[in-house]
Image 1 (cartoon, helix red, strand yellow):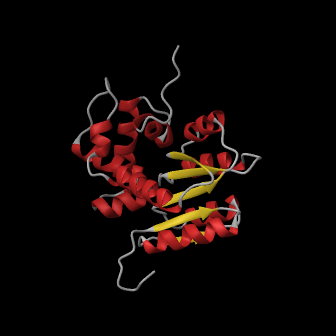
Image 2 (cartoon, rainbow, N blue to C red):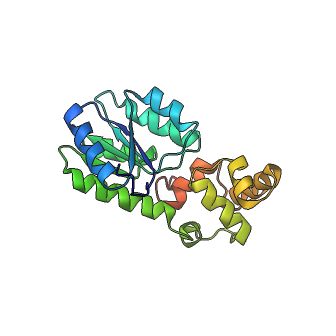
Length: 206
């Protein structure tokens, strides 16, 4: 990336096609992203525990192992937008990817600039100030300003300790706000809550 350009964040990429990977990396770096490519899901998950990507681009192999990577990312509170690509995409696979927490599903072959535009859009959606407040669940008790702030930080992938530092609160206080938000929403955990807020896992209809 040119030294005079401010980085827009890191994009984690898994793509087995070397040519596709090189084109993506070049286009993303030209758009001011730092690109980190991974050979497999295990190495990506390991890295995601220590640093928060701006976005994740996951190739879906025939064995669908990317779905497990997706679920693990969400379980570990990595709420960065995840875009799934596949050379053998089907409607069923796209539905499974979205249910597992994907933000977008893109069939190969794709135009590199289209991917960059979709990554930009996904990041903008998640980073939008007040996005959580606007999307708060209908019929649920409204959030206080502090609860909404905590939830927005959770959606950005921060840990309780990270939120505590950002908001100048104790980790225990943040845990209290988090518990209150989950209780108001009737959600089992943060992943469940955020999927519902972003329309990625509506409660099952009776």
